[in-house]
Length: 320
Image (tube, rainbow, N blue to C red):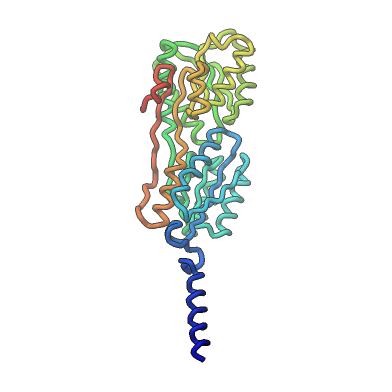
């Protein structure tokens, strides 16, 4: 009997040792040392991944999320369809995600589903393009009017206050396209700069190149091009270069992606580009603050911008 008791105690000790520091956790929790707290699932609806700037947004979001071991982001690409993006919002609600981050394709169609999620008590952070009303948790984005105005002022400077230009607009059903135009008009106000051609290119380089070809066939001389984003400005440059006319004009874009707009300035393709921050890092940080009840968010967070020209691109541009 005594031998049997000793063996029993030894077996218990061995079983305890096999636990090896494993600590039971309730469902959804993470053991200490792997990030404290329950698992957090955030749905991210991106309006499209056809633009390099939006690819950068997702990449910056994934990088920012690495700071939070208990955070999982579920990414969805709406492929440039507001209907698809509406459906994605409803899918996230049905999944019971803890929060939603959305960068809308268009303002009006996404206002209602954003409001529905918000009313259900799901925090919703809107990036880049605003929705109507105030039924969302927080908006994060750049000041497109300010950027457009700065682009207009730079155009006045480049052209000495007069000239005929082409404006290649973004998606006209989006707020940024209108803001970048309105700001630009403020920037050139009082000058002798005339916009002779202003088609919508929907943020797409191939559309911009096609429209620029039309402009080149219609106008014997063009002094400059203002693209609502860098792909539009680059598409215009490529069209002009094919007709050996690129040297007669200046080119300005917006976004300042490191391997796109900034590189184009370094290469002498663009005369200026303006940073339009993605807000991805800020979106991730704020969603965690909100869910962990660390801080009340502002309703609107406006991000800054920088201008990159041949004079300052090597030193990291200039803050505006």
